[in-house]
Image 1 (tube, one colour):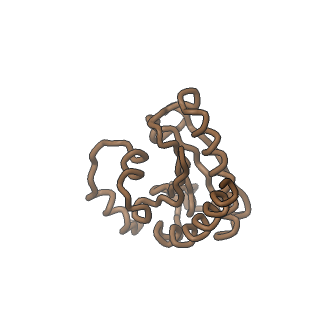
Image 2 (cartoon, rainbow, N blue to C red):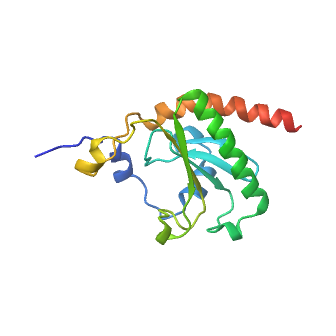
Image 3 (tube, rainbow, N blue to C red):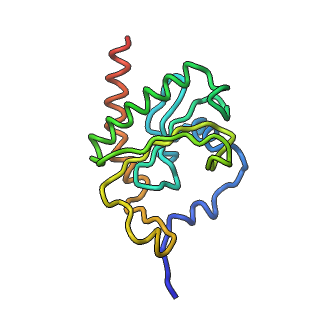
Length: 169
């Protein structure tokens, strides 16, 4: 019998299942590090995906609880793209990926895991980052803990966010 150890999953298994929106709930909680929130903009924010495809898989979401591009305030859409650009720069500096995937899934038929709250995915990619595990075992291996990833990215996001804020004032 094969075993796959994933001790970090116990937090999810035993954690509160309030049924609320993770984007709305996490951004209101005030504990950005524990919630993986890397940067707060005026209309949207950047956070780590708690169940990433790759290390540093980010999500950018408006504060507004909306489910479509057509219902998202224009200023939030514009800021989401600006934050995606900043996130690309931050990840390039902090973790040196070879490329990026960017996408938005609208509706469950399009693959949205959380269809009630629009969010943009930004995934760093490395040459050879897909190995035999997904094909043979149906498993993705994430080689770094979320808080370790957060601690690598947070100082860069803080610096770049301050630079942009300083440039706009």
